[in-house]
Image 1 (cartoon, helix red, strand yellow):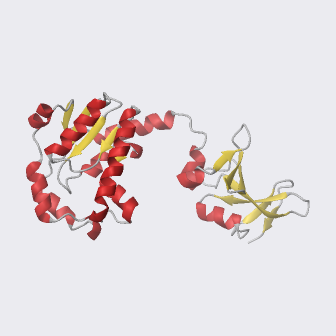
Image 2 (cartoon, one colour):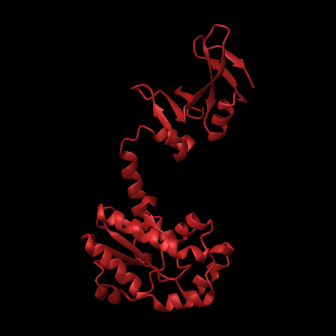
Image 3 (cartoon, rainbow, N blue to C red):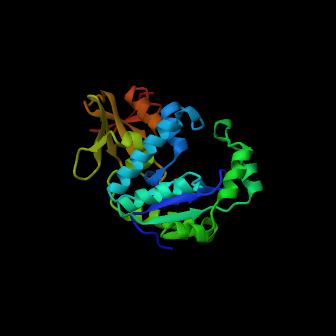
Length: 271
């Protein structure tokens, strides 16, 4: 299955039909979802008073990505014809191909799934029923002008996600080990300080925490953080770190592990 890039990809289906699950086949940075924007604006994805703000932000982000030739996945019901036609109009304005992926889950399943959701994300049964009845046919979507139309159940979205992940993993990312151990937020504050990517530091507002790569055994933590104090020989002290919690303990000079001297390699218990 080949999807054009860039593309405007619209998920179509009633609430609870599995649209958001299918949307996970695509990179998170592509996805626009009103629930997420409502949560950003008001702290809850179901806060309907935030819908006007969420819609305004949605349209601005959608146009910004399309104008730059970036793919977008519209993760919403899109069962109303005017909504879909607006998406088509915006895509055509920027010359971006369009793809509709339709989730045709039976109505009883859509309704049953609402009970498993947090109260703030549950959709009333009458609304789900209306959405389900309004899901367009394959032929209707093509007649509207969508370049590609697919039923979610008929395409291997897991294969697509695995293929994208494999391609991304093949790309060189010098920070992938830092990202895997400590997460995206901390990685954004990290820079390597040597050409071999073996020393670096987290720096925020003039405060920093030094890290070094140890190349330990597969089941060992491969990074050490510098803590305060020195060895009797005058060398710096380092403790193993593999999680944000261990980074925090090292930053506070309260590690639970033994420290290693960076000069003489002596091991000292400092916890």
